[in-house]
Image 1: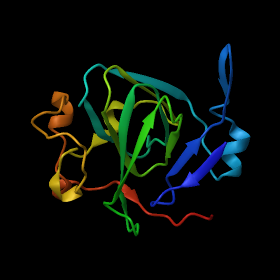
Image 2: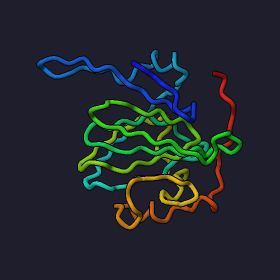
Image 3: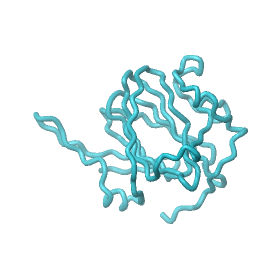
Image 4: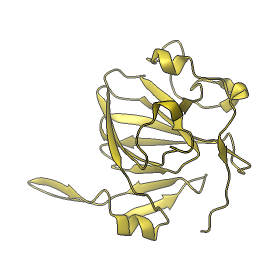
Length: 190
């Protein structure tokens, strides 16, 4: 398994190995020992699975605030998504910056997102399915987000806001200038 830091070093792009033959393939996609050796120390408690039928479906930008803040391990098992992660940690050298990563069933990559980041994605193929592990249970009272298409974030989602398929809830998330982050940057020991 190859684990690489991204431009925001706390975010990790993970490439599990696939071993294939005439029967299909085998892949180890999660190993506590392997992840801990890369500095990813999570006790995942819940797996989530989403299906987005239409191309241009946007989900995000979401997070959970403390004390129920979540780290996530995200992968796309069918279709293709453009995954977006925004640094919400006040005091971070990358506060308000984002990364983009294409996740799909062919590249078999995963994205590790620690606490303190907003996460979202847009579908690039129909019937895209995303699985993600989280290290805290869903908590409606800690559910939060930032408006996905806010121009101050400067994110190229590849879809115009008037063409995107977005939930009513996500369309009403606060703009970046009105957002008060519940997260503070703590320099990692690595």
